[in-house]
Amino acid sequence: MSNLLHQHDQAGEFDDLETEVQTGDVNDIRPIPRVTIQAFCESEVIAQTLEMASRDRRMARAHVKVHMGGVPAAVDFYNTAPTPNLIVVESKLAGREMLVHLGKLAEVCDSETKVVVIGHYNDITMYRELISNGISEYLVAPISMADVMGAISEIFVNPENGPLGKIVAFIGAKGGVGSSTVCHNVAWAIASHFQNDVVLTDLDLAFGTANINLDQDPPQGIAEAVFSPDRMDDILLDRLLAKCAEHLSLLAAPSTLERTYDFDKNAFTQVLDVAQRGAPCVAVDLPHAWTGWTRQILASADEVVITASPELANLRNAKNLIDALKELRPNDGPPRLVMNQVGIPKRPEISVADFTGALGVDPAAVIGFEPALFGTASNNGQMIGEADPKSSVTESFDFLAQILTGKAELRTEKKGALNLLSMLKRKK
Image (cartoon, rainbow, N blue to C red; front, side, top):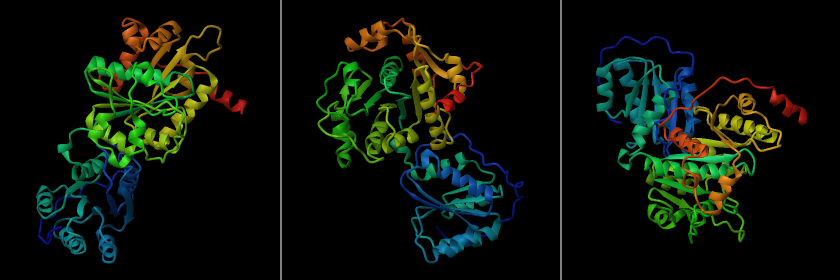
């Protein structure tokens, strides 16, 4: 920070802050890197906004602490403590008074520390003066989470790195419901129809089927990446990828039982980071398991797709997943729900309307039970779109691909629902 002891005329103060925390549009904000952020607020709503932003998945790598007391508290704190990568301070002062306070903060800040000021005066002259004297950004209250996260992203994310690809995580509400098949076919549809490069990552290391479904036998894959995280970069990733089509590459699972696959929760962070820097879409095929690393991937993915079959255990598990994701991803929309294997002869089923109504989530796709089509495609190492381009199943995968790439909106219909969740409770 430079010297901030310049005089300004005081501008009119904004109206009192809103009492509710505003989220804003956070969808286009890039993940914040591993930086340390400390905030010193004067009002509760600003403190709450920063606290909620710190819990957003895009801020998962940053270390954030929120204090009260504004600029004076920050000055006192850093008289005896080292300064972090970024300091966020709220000040209700304006003009010369604000600049005098910030000047005192500058005296205790390291030269490389960035500072964002949240003020209550919409004064363009003061804004320009603050920026010219070393303040990284000046935000005028009331602010949303998107304002804060966007400002931090502008400071620490290098625009020369280009846009990050979207990570889409697929998981089944129960084993055997076809989540992997949905993942592989949607990845193929995105690559084939939109000519977007897709990296399909099979994380069911022991029993993954992506290599079989795509008729591949790569000598290397995800195991080499995850067991050598220090070596992971775009060059190594290119060597490990198997080319399945012009725009589709596979990071295959070893699908062997020669060793166990117990991982730290961040074990796949590096490989997914590298993959999303090199491709517009990374489709992640997760096993039906609840571990630290599956939970971490679901929490950090841009989109989550849950595949379920219309029966009671699936309903219970889907509800548990949706509730857990709501807590892990409070600022994101609900996961996409795919109803699969609908209409199995002689099997008592919950209707799709009742199933989805009980969850409060509209289905992104409803896929009927067609064993001949799926069996033929699997045995031939084909995707459904290759085996029968005109089938309704192909249309479902194509539409889901459009939704996940932002090229279509989910059609919603109002549905009634039986009190199925009470049935679950009675069975406990």
